[in-house]
Length: 252
Image (cartoon, rainbow, N blue to C red; front, side, top):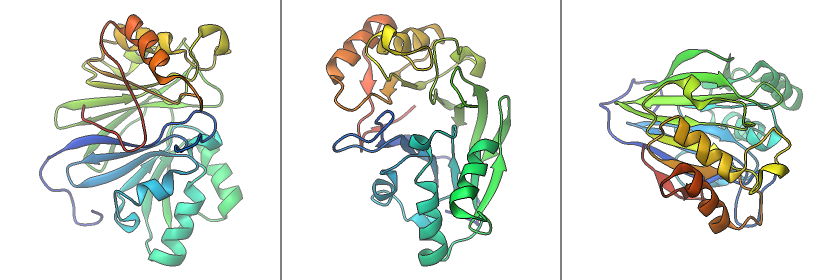
């Protein structure tokens, strides 16, 4: 819904629109997730290929907000296409978009004025804000450029999205009581990460140390052996692990 306020708390779910790391693999899109909280619908990252998948789940004109983690194009490059849809076809103005200042500059370079279609809000590390019915907190990750992990709280449940990060970021920076951790696991082995991404095992260890009650891996490279990633992460996490696949829905 948009202008009329929010109804009573109901569901809190994450639906995977895309989960490929760096580029979209066959049958997948880059990073993008639909957050449903009560009757609000919020997009968290919108990499290439996610817009058509988003349209399978929600009327684009009825979106409540967009949250963007950082300026790397595989996490936001569908935003100018969403602007085209809203401005030139659907006649929607004033959609709230939250992202880093660097992401805004790049989006303006591609699209020109973002207003009135988007109402942009610069965010940075340590921010706490209300996005629809969600309470959102941000934390700077171990990844160039400025990259923000996001904690979403709704109706007593919590979801943490690592965005892209190397191993020096501490998920506990976003607080205790994490019900669902959505964590990047770009590579299977640690020697491949270059210190700016995580391996599957590092993702499992990070979620375990933060006390996350469940773990979903995302941002795997196209062609990755999903079961190998799952096993490596589960060994480090100490419990079964899920892998984000397009269309999958998870409840914190």
